[in-house]
Image 1 (cartoon, rainbow, N blue to C red):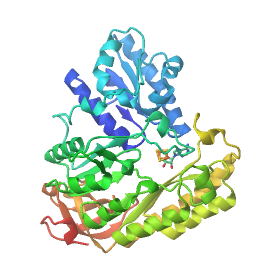
Image 2 (image 1 turned 135 degrees about the vertical axis):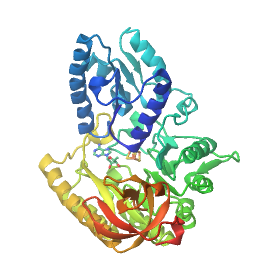
Image 3 (image 1 turned 180 degrees about the horizontal axis):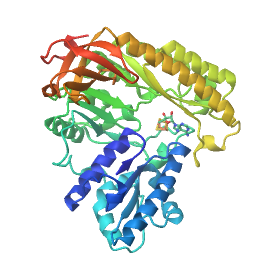
Length: 450
Ligand code: 5AD
Ligand code: SF4
């Protein structure tokens, strides 16, 4: 299983492993040892798609070498490239056996059986009416105990931002019923999860059927999940500013388990470009929203996504993005050069920005974001923070954990603390992590410390 792209793909790869486990499949060390290779792919930018075809070229050689030794190798392409490109994949790479879209993973065993019969490539990219979640197994009994887990609660997106393929590859927004989400969360907690990240392409648009027969929004779901004993931390990603409603903001004020760190993509700080992007909010709407969230939960920190060089973006538009970043101050953020995706409205728009211009803007934005991230991390040094211990560290006597802000934390301590939230004092910074010392070895409530 080779996984690219977002956390939804990581979650889906786990589910594909789970449906294949009863057939006797388990993880392989390398493609050369594998009876089947599944590429779980990402289509969000052109570079992500290109990677798939170059990896397929490499896998072809492995498949041929193994065939010469009398071994069969099934090659499957899953994920958003499979959904978007469909049969085009097997035209370009005829040695691929299975092409399966994200809504068909529960049928993977049947596809594998068909591929074994070798009656030509198997291509499944429908959006079936049945809910795939009803057919996917709960985390397989062999699954390792993981302190942090993902849980997909909705898929698809109805927002149709000008640049984005997601509404086409993942389809219309669909939410899982609250009872199914709560059952899966309880199951994950019983298996050792203490932190669950709720996933969805547009997760705060969640509106699943509730236990009371009404539609529940994400806020209502968060309150219900926060009642599960042993579930210390809840996160959700990725959100759209338009769906950040007052109930959800209130939940951040009310629920200590809802972590004070939010990934809230804004994409641009220019109202002209936001309109061209079909984001349906302004830069000031976003500033006001951040203010409301900070009022509800003063220790809240933010992450975001930015695109530079969307068609029509001028130097002044880009400067408006830089100003928004300066105004907000992010704990971290991702930024990308605009990449035209076939079939999306922006790909056919006039005013394409030249590549060197995009490179320059990206470098400038990334330098600012890096400086803000370093500054944010530096400000945690000396603080007492609650850390969720995730397991043994690289060195003897060392353990690893996660801060409320998703910073990796290393400290000396017993592995027996795994799964507990402990107070630590942050001592120093490494490139991408913090070093800390335990304040005392007894577990604490999240709210009892800084
Ligand atoms: N070009 C560049 N970046 C994109 N993203 C989505 N589509 C594109 C594109 N065509 C970025 C957005 C989104 C993140 C997941 O990827 O910033 O939030
Ligand atoms: Fe894509 Fe996110 Fe916009 Fe939906 S809200 S179209 S997933 S960028």
